[in-house]
Length: 212
Ligand code: TYD
Image (tube, rainbow, N blue to C red; front, top):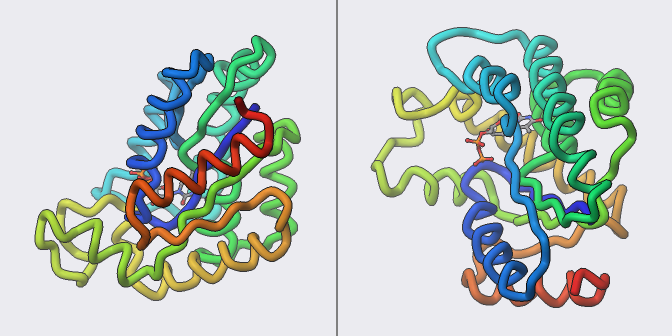
C-alpha cells in the first residue's frame, strides 16, 4: 500500500507522519517512511540542488530535477518495497509537482503529466492525505519559531520557500483543484485541528481502507 501526504510547507505533514508510523509499527505493520525530494544518494544530491538558496533554477529545470529525484527513489526503493508487501508512507509525491511546478510555476499541465508518467512508471498512491491550511497561516506557523518575517528573504529559507506569497497562493489553489479532480484518492484534513484529532481522522480512513 502506498500512502502519501500532501500540503503546502508548514501544513504539519511530518508531525502526522511520525505519529502514524509509530501507531502502525505498534500494530506490527512493516512500514517504510520516505520524503521527496530525496531518499537515495543520487536523490539527496538532487535535493541539495533544488533547495539550496544560493543559486537559481529555471521552472523546467526544477520540474526535471524533482522528477529525476522521484525516478531514482521509485526505482531503487519504492518499487522494491511495494513488491515486498511493505506499506510505504511518502511525504510528498507527484501531486506536489502538479501543485508547485504546474499551478505554482505555470508549467503546461499536459507536459507535466507526461513527465510525471515517465518518472513514476504510472504508480499512483492508494490514498493521499491533504493537510489543508491557508498559505499565510502555514508560513506564519512554520516560521514562528525563528521569527522570520514574511518577506521571503531570510537566509534560513530554502530556495522554494523564497518563492513568495503569490506563488504559495497559486500552489494552494492548485491543491484544491487536484482534490476536486480525484475525490476518491484524496482525504482532506483541516490542518488547524489538533494533532490528535487529525491523527484520528487518518487512522479511521486507513482502517476503513483495510490498512489494518
Ligand atoms: P522540504 O524541506 O522537504 O519541505 P516540506 O517539509 O514542506 O515537504 O522541501 C521540499 C520543497 O520542495 C517544498 O517546498 C515543496 C517542494 N516540492 C516541489 O516544488 N515539487 C515537488 O515535486 C516536490 C516533491 C517538492
